[in-house]
Length: 78
Image (cartoon, rainbow, N blue to C red; front, side, top):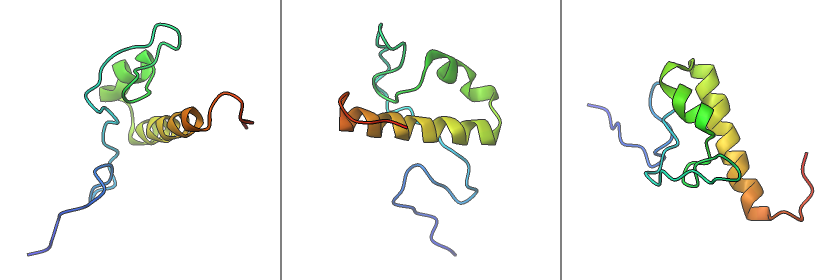
C-alpha cells in the first residue's frame, strides 16, 4: 500500500487544483475580492464549472495577489 499523505494541501496525486477557499468568506467592498482566499466574486462563482487550466490560473492569481499584498502598495509591480 502506498502512502497517499501529502504535506501540501494544495496538491494531490492527480494534480487537480483544490479550491483556494480558507473558510474566511468575506468580500472586501473596495476590491470585490474575498479577504480569505483573494478570489474575485467571478472566480468564486465560476469555480465549479471552470476547466482544470482555468482553476490553475485562478490559484496562481491568488498566490500572486497574496505576495503583492505582503510587499505593500509602494512596491513595483509587473
